Image 1 (spheres, helix red, strand yellow):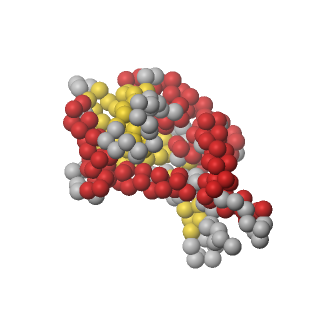
Image 2: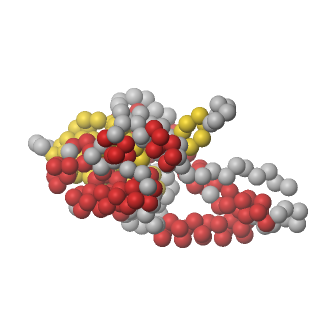
Image 3: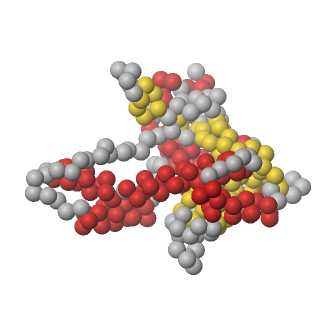
Length: 267
C-alpha cells in the first residue's frame, strides 16, 4: 500500500499588539508546535491577520478549481483493492494539491529574493528571471521605498498583518505594493481578485492613516511562474471603497468567530 503523507491544513495567522507573529504555539507536551487557534487568541489577546479575516469570504472560482483538481487526481490515482475508501480519498486529495505546494514553495523563494533585491542584497541567480523585471519596473517608475516587510497592527479596527512595500512617488504621492506569484498563459489578461484589493487597502489605511486612504495608490505586482520575465502591475482604482468593504468583512469575522480583539486590548 502506498505511504500516505500527512494532510496539510490551512491555519490562521495571529499577531501580538506589538506586531510579533504568533502563528504557532508549543504543544501541551512541549515536544512540538501547533497552529494558534481563536481560543488561544482570546486568551492571549491576539489580533487576526488581514488574510485570516478575508478567508471567511466565499471564493466560487477557487472552490471550482479545487473540485476540478480532485476529480483529475482521482483519474491519476486509481483505488487499489486493498485500501479503504477513507485512505484512498486522502491519497487523492494529497495528489490533487501537490502542485499547489510546489507553487507555494517557488512563490516563497521568489518573495524572499525580492526582499533581498529591494534591500540591495544578493539573491539566488536562478531567481533572476523573476526578480529583475520587478527591479526594472521600479527603476522606470521611480518610486521611493520607505518601508519593507512591515508588521502592522490596527488596534482601532482589530487586525494585523505584514505589508510587502510602502512607497512614495512624485511630490506627495503615497502607496503600497504587494507581490503575488501566479501561473499565467501567453496573451491571457492578469486580473486581481477583490480580496487582494481589500488586503492592500487594510495595510495602506493602517500605515498611512485612514484619513489618507483617498489618495493612496495600491497595486499588486503579479510575477508569472510559467512565463519567466512576465510581470503585470495591477492598480486598484477605488481604495476607499476597498477599505470600506474590508471593514465590513472584519465586522463579520468578529461576529462569526465570537471574538473582538479590540475589547481585549481595552480590557
